Length: 247
Ligand SMILES: Nc1nonc1C(=O)NCC1CCCCC1
Image (tube, rainbow, N blue to C red; front, side, top):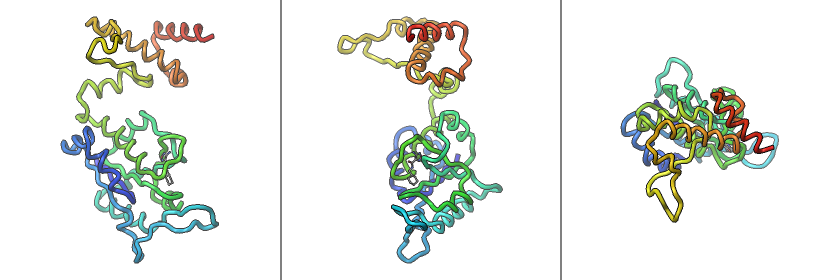
């Protein structure tokens, strides 16, 4: 997968993309991430990339020319037959989910457009943006951190990035439930013991325990996620018992 990031602050990406799993994924050529500084494409003498909003109001708006030219340069280099999916990060977008991550992970190339200040000129969104995505209902100072979050969530889904069993768990075990608790050595720490079932070696019991933990945690913290799920008979019974307890 090719990822192209249009930003005023490419240096922000050095840490997350130069570390651990994301760094290894690039070294293994499973993903090719390149950042482009929008300011390099500004044609005015002072490399200005923002201006006052028409109609007045606080803050500055990113001007169209540098972004249009940067986007054109990137799409030319990608040398595609059809327009490239271009994602604009904004609180106005559709909320990012694991399902969306799995959908985006299938793309051959993605362009991320990171806004700053008060936002970008609407003509950029109307003409270039194919998807407006939000990582949550809060306002950040720019689209860079959301872009990192989304690239991280997508990259770990690319075959070969994670060890096989870890990537397997994502799709099959959890499928919409909150993840069960994890434990590792030592077996006792500060008098705190690991649940005995995890030490039993009985993988049928372990899987059952983990599934029950996921359902209980989801019932407590995100009951909305339970609504759309197909539960087995015994699992539905667990939920019924939890509901009774809650009454
Ligand atoms: N939340 C979010 N999810 O995705 N992006 C978010 C955000 O808060 N972005 C900041 C804004 C700030 C003004 C310019 C455009 C980006």
